[in-house]
Image 1 (cartoon, rainbow, N blue to C red):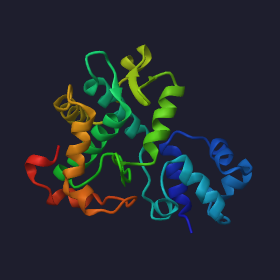
Image 2 (image 1 turned 45 degrees about the vertical axis):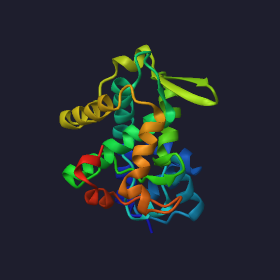
Image 3 (image 1 turned 180 degrees about the vertical axis):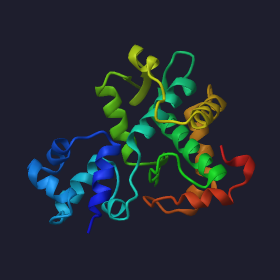
Length: 225
C-alpha cells in the first residue's frame, strides 16, 4: 500500500495541484484528497498511471524511490548548454549519456544520486524512462528545439531555454554537470556510447535491467566519466 504522506510529497515536489494529480489518476479531486489523507487505497491501474507520469515502475512508488523531475530537467538543460557542439546541437543519445555519467559519477563521489532516476540497460546505453518524458515536457514548454537528421534527433536550447537557470541544482551539482559535459564536448556520439558500454555497471547488468548505482563504486577511478 502506498504511503499517503509520500503521495503528498511526490505531488508537491513536482509542483502539481491535487486537481492535477486527480486528473493523472483519472479520479475526482475529492477522491484523490481522501487518498492523501490515508483513506482508501490505490488500484494497480491507478498506480500504473502515476508510474507512467513520473517515468518509473510501480515498485519505485511503493518503495518511495521516484525521480526528482525538476532536478532532472535542470541537469538535462545544463548538459545541452555545455555539451552541445559549436552549432548548439547535441544528439538525443549523447545527451542521455551525459546525464547518466553525471548522475553516476556524482554517486561515485558522494554515495547518492542527484536525481533518484532508475537507469535501464538499453542497447544504446543506460537511460531512465523519464528521460523521454523530460524531453517532451521541455519541448512543449518552449525550452528545447528538436530537429530530425538522418533518422536521429538533434536537441538544442531555444532562446527561452538559454535564459533558464538551474534553480533546482546546488552550485556544486551544476558545476559538476558542466565539467562532465565540457569534457565530452566535441566528441562523437559513438564515442560516449562505447565508453558507457565498457563501464562495469553496464557490462554486469542484463538487457532491460535496472543498473544499481552502487556498481559505479567498483569502477576504475579513471573510467568514471
